[in-house]
Length: 338
Ligand code: COA
Image (tube, rainbow, N blue to C red; front, side):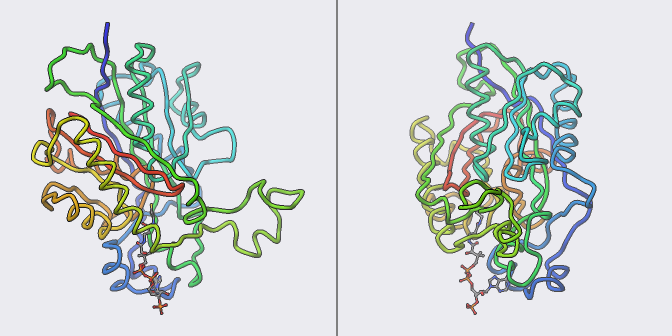
């Protein structure tokens, strides 16, 4: 029997505390006008101290599983994408698994940063097509707020990121051969590690001439805060997102007109506007959430998916185009019929 993977349930969770640009003005020597003009961000959500990444993931997962009309115990694999795990090891997928009370199933943690959701979607699609798994829970979840430099020195990075989680259930369906069947149609995954240090978190880590992966010197130097070459990231993001999405559409003989909705990674509204300009995508076909949540990295696409469903912009049978770009550099695109 041949199987395809259909997204049968979507969920998301944003921690209740909203942090506006005006709130950041008090910490970062920044201002609302600068942030809005350069990024489109108005506010983001930050967790309280006692909340972990797997806590956010749990809330999103519960909603996705409920919307799929199944129980936790019907999940036979978890794929967890995050760059901000609960702990260095084990992966956050295991902590989520324990919270969901689904022992003995397959759990796979992946990184891939802002492209993590699309990498996970492609992996899930392959596992479904082998017939080995029936209901895969794919989660993207991040807590950035605990890792940001909240002093004026960190302002270029710290205004961009927010906390949140998104989840989807991908279920195996017998392939009918009908082109209108709901399914993950195609994904393309890319990376270029020669740009790894253009957007990265140096410490803690083993690539230091030190007998400890976490030293006081490292912290004194601020190496535990993310570092970014914003301009280079911007230029490559526009180029690569447009390139990979155009290739994926062409490979599947789809034109912009055939796509009902575009869900792009949410790093900067200007990146998405440029991609739309290059690809000649009408603005009303792109669903953005960055104004409310900032960049939630692996969570942006599933959060956008859930918001689009709730806003009536994403309905069953629609064709969706997706693209993401981030640290690595990694980038990816995908097309699905919802
Ligand atoms: N608030 C106020 N001023 C700020 C600031 C902040 N948060 N951050 C930087 N600035 C200042 C800079 O110090 C600089 O001042 P100067 O002209 O006196 O030297 C000025 O603003 C311009 O900085 P610059 O870095 O050239 O701005 P930019 O137009 O490149 O925009 C980003 C900066 C970060 C918004 C933009 O580069 C970007 O979005 N890049 C992509 C980042 C991204 O998407 N990362 C995640 C990828 S997944």
